[in-house]
Image (tube, rainbow, N blue to C red; front, side, top):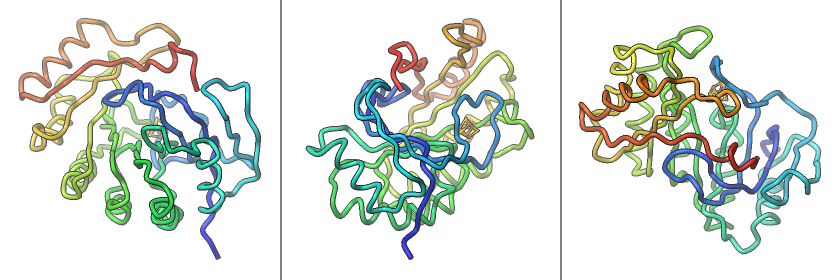
Length: 250
Ligand code: SF4
């Protein structure tokens, strides 16, 4: 029996965050996540239908029954981008790696028929799962999830280290994203930056200010302190807010 999975939505839009900001992608949003961030604003509950948006805005769409198998997902992607002109397919969520059995089947099939790059947006914790599909992944956007922002305050530093090491060992183009408001300590941030420090010549860091609508939830002073923490250990760092919300895109 083919593996099947529940997907919330599939849409073509602009990458709104970090290193590849502004590139056109096809986003495949999986449901479910292995952690709970205080600031999570993504609807990732299981749903009986997947919504497929044909354009950048949300006016032109159709719905299909969940769950999807690999052939069904590839067909939708090809319909959205028959000429393979988008920059990449973004596997996002939720946490895509919790669907590892599906991805192990889907990714080899996808790579057989499409030359488009595979871009994985992940919370950077499930390193064993990444290991099992690493050869099919071209780009990783890996979050560092500070314990201050997790409902159970778990510390995932060891898992983040393993995850980043797995990315580098497999020559995956990787960057790290850290979402911040005022509620973190510099000591905590420094502990998490130790994960990146050994790889700083290959991996850039992007600080993403947390927002409430158009209001930034981090003061400019705290933002500067976070930026300086990265600079002090020679990490290549940039501050980039989410742009897709400003552009009113999906
Ligand atoms: S990792 Fe992402 S999807 Fe999961 S709870 Fe955090 S913000 Fe939400």
